[in-house]
Length: 586
Image (cartoon, rainbow, N blue to C red):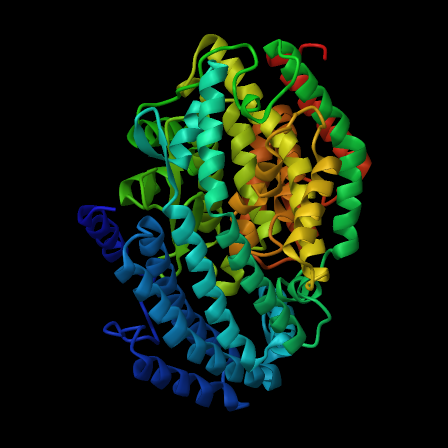
């Protein structure tokens, strides 16, 4: 990344002001100066240790300091993600994560212990009940020795980002990022697609052993965290650490079974139809992203500026309030959307906690997927806007199982307005692609989630056993139509490119739950747009003040992932896809 872009990101951050005036943290406070942080923690400890103190006032002060400290983490994380080749940005992030944060976490635990003893807990308002429940859980799970392990985990994860950020491959006479090569995988020319697929595959396989070693290090470290906290495995520990009070591992397995029963038949029909449309005897890995009718890949916009302008028009047509939120994002410039060498992969929305303002990061290369990604990440940003009125950070940190409903709903509702990017045949095609991807991600969620359950409940497995398990689960949760012969090594290593395995363990089931919920939001939208958007925003505005099923209910959808519900969703989506472009019989 150029120096100009580093300065641009820094300027954006410096221009964002606190959401409200500070009352506890001094204006000149430096969050990377531990003595300054410690002095404020001392004051907080003296307050909460006094049984006669006002507990709500204490929580407001503690939350203000937490916002400032967390915002510093997010600023440094964004900067180093924007340029993984910049050692100074990486070192600045690790210095904060490894210096201030461990000591802050230890002191925060002392504060939490005193909070649990304070007689004012019972008198807190209703919107603090989920906070109190989670606080009790986190106090029980805390182990000082895991703080150092969390720092080491961040260091190892950063090495994954550096590895993926440095991956480029020669293609058609020039070195290109792997994300940019994804465009060629949509080319109607099958030979060109295969050449691009080969280039990407060969480059990824060069780093196969490094990815395996990174994951082995993370696996050992995470298992130690779990046993330190008294758990048999990291899976069970993580379910508690993620405050998953409303579902258990057994519910995930039931979801896997429901996907196999209700979604896999449609998934297979879609791949059979694709093979028939392409007129090929065997559907190969380089055939899964191209238009099955041989049309050139969709090109919705020329650059990131066009992408932002188009999505702005989409959101204003959905709802003026949501359109206004997106305008705020665009005007503030808290968007880094374009792909470039050295940039971390993927896309995410994060928030600057004290400013209570979103930042969106992605890797746009001019494809249909860019529109979908920005619609999705903007949905997360809307969640940030809808919850910024809450006085304590916890109530703004919505559970991600519902956060993904906020984001994915915008993909499907937004698809009804992508005529801002497309016209004629391309419009129907783009909409169908969005809905088809929404359905086909459900088996992928089941695959990734089932693999993670196995990874962490059998921590002594070898890389060879890991490979066999991944391949076995692929047989269960892929259509069986795509022929990987000759590319078995690439398939066995294909999990390496899924950053969630490295960055956010046991995070993926959320996409499945939320995908089903988002399709229900979209179905409600089709029946009564005004009522559906009102319910959507009402659910978002609850933040983390209610249990997960209540958040779904407020948004007008069911927290139910049974075969019956999944079949209803599949039937609704398949009917819509066939209305747009009828499938070819397989």
